[in-house]
Length: 272
Image (cartoon, rainbow, N blue to C red; front, side, top):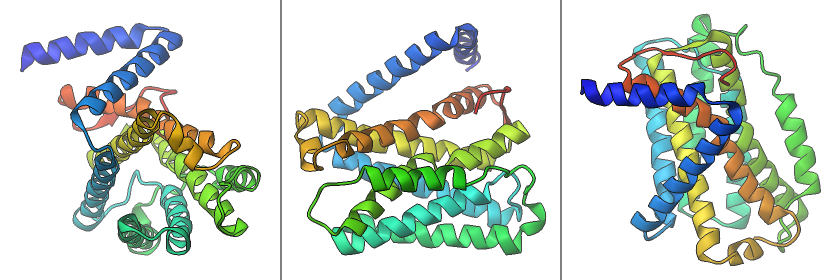
């Protein structure tokens, strides 16, 4: 185990010394390599979406354990949970009026759990809530997402309000984790259960992004046509990619910390 950790430390140290452009290039290459691997080992790419939901549920389970067993919400962003509840509520509405399926049930379970987390942070565990660290103004993301949804939305036959709502929840989901990242940026130290939860979000969003990218590749672009015309199909794909890269930097330091045997994750300045 020691030689393995030494090798990993040597690689991570080399990556850390590289300029930002090289780091970005390495991240893109790593992402593409992971996509190629998934394409060969996962034959039904819909399973990637199911896996994303499963990993997300695992992350929420870790969050529930933290709140119920440790009786603290320190390090968690209430605003991220509120943004999550907003886009889930909108997506549930769209699912009921546009395309009800198994994902609607999964979203409903996640929505109820998120409401419970919000209740615990606001009332039961309010004393441990780090309100001064959770200082991200949510209107910085809600308003731009709403404006973008008004301008760029699906061109399907559904009612205009439903199409705008659908676009809004796609855009908001992509940036809903930003307040949580701000809290971690402000504290610099992330305790284990919060780190596990955010890492699970990162993995889930990568799998979801891989699902969309591989679906587009396998359909030779026909999936984008099926989503409609104009800028909307491209914006769906861009949203998936954005929410993956938002968490990529954190996931890198999380993996480095785990292999280094550190229980508490310490983030360098400017990571998030």
